[in-house]
Image (cartoon, rainbow, N blue to C red; front, side, top):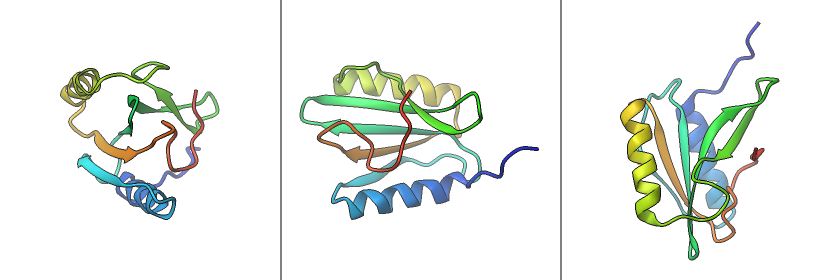
Length: 111
């Protein structure tokens, strides 16, 4: 039986709240499906940008992939990636955080 999952809009609100508690700015750049949309997280630092994409482990647990690669990329490269993904999936959310260390301000398992 499938494990119940938190609605996307509630997850996004919680992530923004955690960022605020950590003293980091977070904004919703694009709203997707409130119940079951996927999420792309943009981490912005002085050295560049990293985009995280939701994934699931073999056990079905939420995890995150550095979708733009292990090194920071330019704004143009990140924007290009985001445009391709939202073109394929109109239900995607995009949430952006100021992250000087390029780490998400919420508990995240990075693959």
